[in-house]
Length: 458
Image (cartoon, rainbow, N blue to C red; front, side):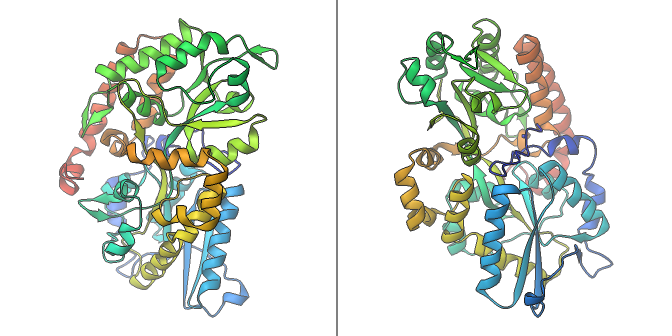
């Protein structure tokens, strides 16, 4: 949740979109998966394999959580699951790493067809809607009461609602923020802050490109040709959208102006680069500033050999802050007792204490409001102002444009266009006209199910 730049093996930041090439390959088939949701022979989905340690052998229920977090983030999750297991005597929970979002979604698709599924699936933000349209996800209204729902930041919780009913519970959530190299900025005589506008960043370019790192001239920024998330944020900042509802407008107004600004920054101004491995140039000190997920914060601290600064995203016409990341869903065909046990795990992971621990260990947003008041988190916020940026920016955060969220393969179509603009210097209008044509074709395929299940009132 979105490219394949994911699986940063630090585990600190998992891209929300890396599954989307999968759906374009036909791995998600609505009739097949919808049929699966009715369960195995009327008895409900079986559970995927889980080995229970001897000390937990007498627990009444087992809960398997499939995720895309390994390395440092995986260790944080395992620690939380261990705390859950020690907090009660009825349920044994286990987190099982399934690879990046692409791999995990492929595996859960196969699991649905085999009618043996995990009890909790950590879906990226642009995956769960596709499974919702396949009618495989449980309506969690009977579990998530008002007290639970109101404990979350509203715009994060609301991202999992369809017609005011929850199908996806926010957990590892993020927004893009601007990262900048404090050392480079100081050498260039620039303020110790991120740019307020894209024009200001370009204006700073003449000072930044005079700097060198590893014997090479520094670039102002790097752009992703393997993701659409940062582009969507920039499009919003230029006053455009990817779509209004399911009406595609990526080839109009601010979207075209944004793409042209970035193309000229690369080819005319010689200040930006199209990154083959997004973030690597920044971490190596070759780029002054760039956009990336809040969930990349811990990994950036580990990789960068300089002082890292974070700031709100730049504006141009307005502020654009799309949310991303992952959350938890439960499948319809799972027996009731397993659903209830799974919900107990989700509820534990959604507590202020768990949310604070997860955010501190990974860099993802604290999805629960009270998490920021936990003693350790409050100290960290006071000590590290970078952590405050994303939380403060939540007030401007919005949900993805619906075409990006619901149309299968939307993100690869968009970033395929960006590769032509940023990599081949193709005119933005021509390329985005072709992107729009492909998105409209995808929109037509999902429109019947969308109208049936959502009806434009998502």
